[in-house]
Length: 446
Image (tube, rainbow, N blue to C red):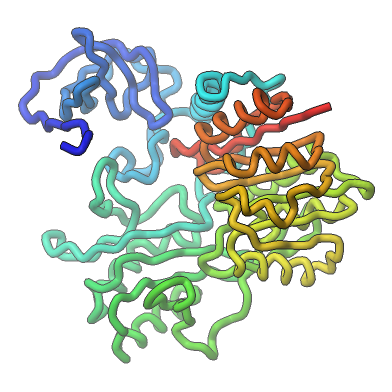
């Protein structure tokens, strides 16, 4: 069977009772019945529950929550009517304090179990708005004949199907209110079955919708899209192929660059409709402030910013440091970062293109001397960069992570192989109500 473990669906199991012993970051309660672990969606540690097994694995089963006897004090009423079916959120049934505690525990356990390291101090969680925070989203689209409508939204939990939803509590209000109108719009198009997704971006100056189109829209389709954009005050773009194929519906109505402000640093950063930006504006600002506090840049310092993107960290650091070198793998992002430096009158920030997934990517900066380093890698982490980083003689490394497992792996290497100590770590609640754990770790070396 190619090494894959068989999953057996269970359809007629009798209800069972149990006390939930623990909880996972995915929002599932964990119990053990007759010597086998059972994960129960929506159950919270300490609760007595009634459940039914729905899927059997070799080492564990999955259960459906049927009822709750003794409720946890951490349980709250989910705000979204689609919670439980939609795969976008998994923790809406937990209080904010309990969500933060769960994520802090996930970070600490990963650091200890995978990296065999313990932070010198656990920093307070950086938290912000719990709702309406998500300014970037990729919405799936599917024409479902059985429902008589086009569905627009996130995938269902445990399924590739699109959730039948009319709104979303975590999306920025400028996008959340468009889900139902988008369903009607796409349903009216001749290419309704050839629009697999809509990507949304909310800037400080505009809201943009990028329609992925697998067939050319007709003149009538274009008129409908144009009318939708005017009615809802959004820019419409079409994407027929890769990222380079994105073009405005009407070139003369492009509207110019998108941008967001970083008021504490006095900066304005321009970005493209599908460029990577941090999805949570409030947490992004607080994260940058924390980075400045921990690295304490000053005019005599030379800094390195790896995975710099459009300059989100590079330019605020450059406001206070002597010089900053930003390195990024995508040439288009580096050009955007350079343009942002020029836009903001910053002359002490340089940028380089390099593939940071391999040791060769250190060629543009390896052997140089830096006082401090900031890195914000993708989920895969920064394994190939650790040895070159250690050779820069940087006394401080600030690692911003979107995956506690790869952070823990890399932390173990920095500590056990390169002589750093993990001075501090903490979570950034970039994605409230979800299982996503964003975190930051400060490494120091004498």
